[in-house]
Image (tube, rainbow, N blue to C red):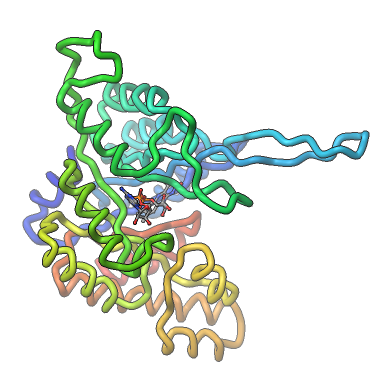
Length: 318
Ligand code: FAD
């Protein structure tokens, strides 16, 4: 079932959904099952699985020279989605990214997903590789998520990259995109960023999932700005609890989001990491309850491998 159909079926009830990361290469699928075993009691209608581009790694050779090679450290998104659907009988939402993939590789991934009966995707650009200053598209790949949305829409209309394919099977993907309540870090300002989001919506996106935020006012303002710009799609808040003191700086550095003074003050006063975790959980529960009361379609939690913490929050909210 499509994500938007789940929202329609819920008739205004707030759903809970979760995002998981593929294990590092060499890891086991069991780690994903272990995470989801803990969270299935909350009846998520869908589970997101992130997608990861290749990274450059450097190995020192006996000669002392460094050898550079490219490796995808977390492959397997499509297979993981199929395994999740098979085992838990829930829908899976694979993320698809532009970075590192040619348009043909993307088309082939979409064909695999279609054949597996997976009809939701979250269409994203992806970030720059680690240690690279800015995002560089694949030589034959997309530059913006907008182009990826257009490619999925083309396939939904039976148009493939090869014009010789006539009467190609029409896929039926429900397309999600990313939204940034505190603006995307590269955008010169909030309004311009929103105008690019509107382009993705006009191109055929069906729902928006937001970057994490710690102040609900940012989400409410964002929704208001979207509605004023004519964006009427469901806007799913993405949430991540703060659990470690060092995240006071690592989260803003990595995700370009701010943290409210009350949260920061409480974390700074906490006596140890367990106390920080409790503060983060309580903060996330309060955020979730307020968002639920405001009637959001779904609370979407970034699990980041910490099922126990997300379980505590979901139990308090559901
Ligand atoms: P875009 O919509 O392409 O926007 C990127 C930047 O370009 C923005 O600054 C935008 O304002 C600007 N822009 C857009 N269109 C144009 C245009 N036509 N002309 C000029 N500028 C333009 N990353 C992963 O690698 N894997 C994941 O699984 C993943 N999952 C995510 C899930 C969510 C919910 C979110 C919020 C992010 C996720 N990311 C993931 C991170 C995401 O890929 C990055 O934030 C990335 O930097 C931007 O992606 P985007 O899809 O928003 O890009």
